[in-house]
Image (spheres, rainbow, N blue to C red):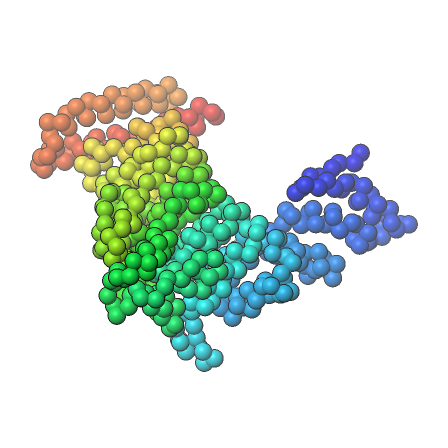
Length: 500
């Protein structure tokens, strides 16, 4: 019987093709001729191979080399300036790859954008011409679904490019340097937008950006010129993320580059830590996000706290000349209404970080499955005994076990897996599990009930000792945290033994 395989709008009768190739030779022990198998069958199978596997298959024969060229173009990586520039030209109008623009599904940009000469000496910290050509080429990939930016430069010009790719669904920004700059002339032309008229801004040909005339931002006296500049300022310093990027459903954001004179050399310092309009955190306001991977840092928490408030017109925040007193600032709102899966990474968890996370995720109207990763924490025993981590929906937790006890109040019903990263705690749990094996299962249940009762009793006692720093109160908080730890671990052990 022939079986049909379905893929990307076509059906391929695989079994008949294989049978035909198998009966080609008179002797069934002969090597089958792969050239007899229809190309559609191989292309159907190649759709399920990764890019490294396709590279290996392309070296098998001339036939496979020809067949794999189109699938290999599904994912592009631009990591070196010279190769990227040549490749961008190949994808251009009249280039050798122009007819394959619709094949590209994913692009990885890992360019530093440093401009060097033939002796590898640094000429410019940022090659804005290459930056422009890369972003211009992204607009030509009509079926692009995924874009990843890693260890590269991002500016507010990125958002208009993302808007110009309606097929884009996945966006990843990893360890990038954020540079706040006006949208420069070449990219404005590529996007079909107007450059500012003379009088207020001067175009700098060296760094290809607009600067204020004589270093001072003044509104033009001519009414027509003033109106034109006002319109230009609104168009290039405001962006409605919610409506203009609603086609993006998956976001990965790891902006953990700090503002330092040495961190990002030879670039200017990364401005990710400076609250500003068009900050990358505004990407969190996209309402269509269903999947989010977020690395949360104290710096981002502070920026989010500032941007989420009504600040009005504040020149220190706008990071833009505003001689017209326009209300350019928009409070950052991250409803995340359609979020279904969240991976949250916190390197160092503190009480302030917990409050920031709750503030960020507190506006969700629908439950989401949360995967929480914590590297370490700075919570004292008193903090652990009294704090509440109101983060619901956590199904997988990785990190110090005491934090898991804080999550149980909100995620007790959804927690499926706890992975501990502290060796000493792991040994204690293993020893406990071995000892439990020697007792009956009902003894374990009794122990859990006893632990719960003692926890409740100790919590009542703690009220009278709150704020005291003597030895008795310290021991009481330590006792409370110990019982909380056991209450967190025992249900998982009991569940495992019950299933045996």
